[in-house]
Image (cartoon, rainbow, N blue to C red):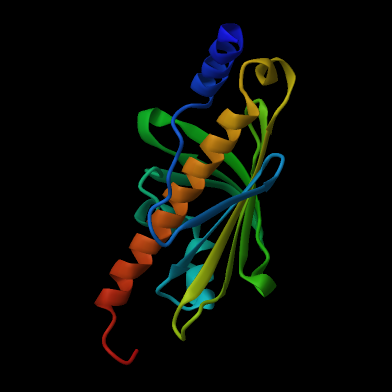
Length: 182
């Protein structure tokens, strides 16, 4: 019995602390390797999409993005490097879908298969957007022996909470700056 509890404690420790989303951000994990989140933004879907598809705006929206380098862009396809704290680089391939106001990208480096999409649908009230985030993350090869599914899910949850929260804060601030009736 003691050995079973010890094993459980070791496994739980590998997952890291559980992320609890703040009020207004919903997170679900419907299946293996997938984490979904949603939040209401104070902006029209088309306006949110236009701002987010211009990668130069990302440092203003997402605090963990300090700089952006666009390597190539052809229509809705782009190769983009996001540069964060400690000179961390995320090399991403974007394939956005304007007809559904969806920002989609995959990480092109590292040992994990990671895809993230943000779909921007009309919200519950005029002038709002229901932002739906989805992360698919899976680790392959030797790294999969030391990184648990629980750790991956926890990291995906933390990323969605951070990004959805950052978007909500950004658009709430810009809504306050807009003149009444616009």
